[in-house]
Image 1: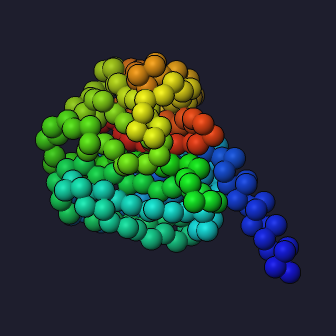
Image 2: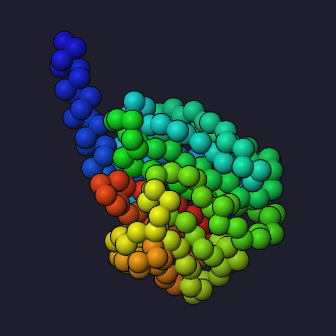
Length: 214
């Protein structure tokens, strides 16, 4: 019986890692002190989640606050995703993240950027980093961008820039693809949309979600 359960777990975990994964907010610019829900999603139909991520493979569910304090969060099943909630009490930029792994090393790193509505953003690269093994970091202050502006980002692996293929998916539109240069940097013209960006390097995947709002 234990052997059967173990085999089922491997099958489920393998199918989960074959999908993309992301964090979704209905509002990426919440009011300060507002308690809001957010969703841990998996599948191929962003923003709709197709699969519930197994709790067994989720690790390091962290929220990095504007003061660089790390707060852990818990999740529960909700329809085809997992759900959590958080109150953004301080003004500034929050990084919400988690990792997926069947071993000690992360296999997929997920990150979302939240900016409180009242915040007058002053750009700092550290404000946009999670410290994960692989991650995508904006090089442009998100809250200052308007439709048709150029956004610059970079992808790093083990704190070093890498050349990688990236999938850019504006909500409600078709995906398009870019390569980062040898400094890990890539750019594109934004619309007033929520975005999912995914990539992989050295067998490790990552995603970033954020919103551009005029």
